[in-house]
Length: 141
Image (tube, rainbow, N blue to C red; front, side, top):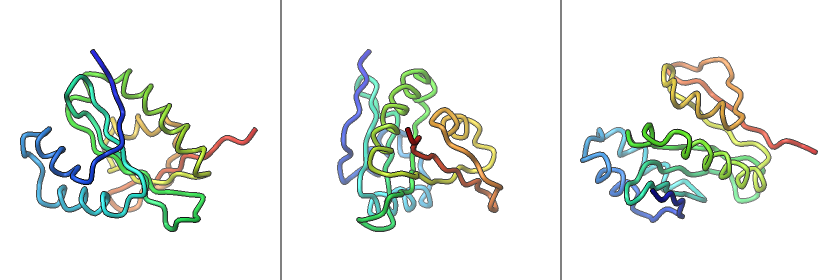
């Protein structure tokens, strides 16, 4: 089994549609395309030749010391939880070298996503509607 993380192409919605057998709603595709267009950096995570996750960072400006983290994972990520978490921890370390704070939201009830964010050092705030905001901060020496 091989695991690789690669910079994402500009057509991630096509990759995700293929990986999920076209099972995305029009709203999900719209959100993925919006995130893709706004992202300064994006990556894909693969196990063997199967796409398991796509994520990116959206900074509010080019000079900002914070960014918004978004991620979409396929069902296959559950088959490789340990590899996914370990590689995510490495990636978040790299992200925190560039940004002091990484923010995001999880959908309420998305226990796997919330567990992933906690494994990355995320701290959740109070829910905001159907979502719960989180912050991951750079650890200062």
